[in-house]
Length: 296
Image (cartoon, rainbow, N blue to C red):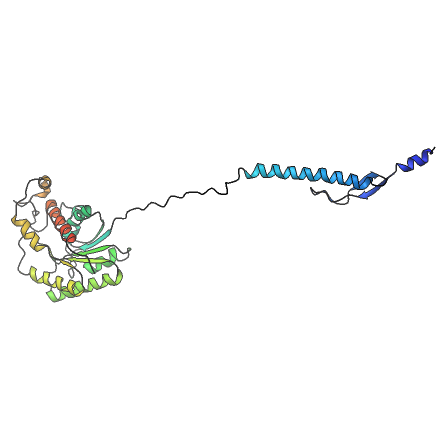
């Protein structure tokens, strides 16, 4: 029989270095395993397998908890094309009291505003009463100054309308023509892609003898600048001679500011159009623009 000392010696333990822990246990921790052949490798294998299994399970739970449902790899997302919004044309104008309004007729009721409503424009109206290509009026600026101060700093419009000449009777036709051409040249240099139209002077009554000289000066400058010119005088003569027919226009004429001394088209000052007169001018402008190719 073996003595107690020998049995005790067979069960003594020795300290061995443990492998690195898969979850990050600090190295150097020692395990006490029984002495004997094959004991250490078997124990070590079982421990490693259990710990690796635990790590794998934790990783699966971590992915399942944080990632959520994985996207389908073959599923395509349909993207709707961006909606196309129609942009109304931007039309700017420089003019005198016929363009900006006078008396009871405000700028939003002038013939240009009436045309803008019919054609779907976004109008920007500049200028002042009493002004012209040379005449500065009470505003202290001519058409070129009005263009520079009120319009030139804005983004280029689709169309610019220059309307006037009525107030330039104090100057010779040659000077009026030169001033008009200078304005048109400045506009084309500032906005090379903008279309430009020139409207001649407006008289709501029979024009004076010198009116033809101003009209000729303006039309000559427009022709040199290769800009279309519209003459309102023939249409105005027709409007003055023809009485109004029945219809919606007569309702406008019933307004107090739409009549003047037997004329439904001219204000009591004998110069400027009434609300009805502006609407008639607006219709003329719309018809004229629709019947001509815009160039320049």
